[in-house]
Image (cartoon, rainbow, N blue to C red; front, side, top):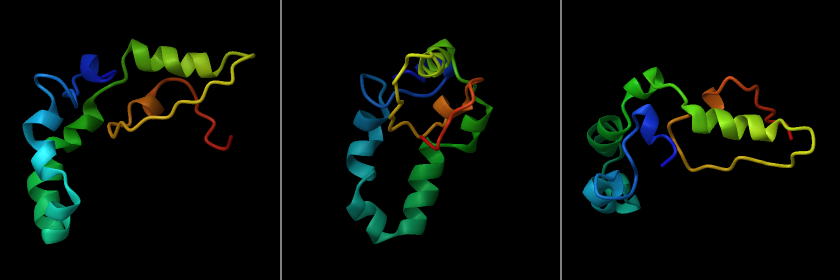
Length: 96
């Protein structure tokens, strides 16, 4: 994924979070069984607060800059939960 160079573990692939734990743990069934246990043992373990120390990389910055080009009609739609797209140096216009 785009955030791997910033230090975020990939979601898919050989070292991906999905193949390692998400496929069996990140399910609605597991969450509904015990939301607090799911949050404490899964979410906090695999999406730690240390992500706040991670900075956007040049790919995040380049995408952000593309959205600001005068003739651009580019919108960034992402499933990333790391927040790096919105942490770029470019001001995002969320009202559009």
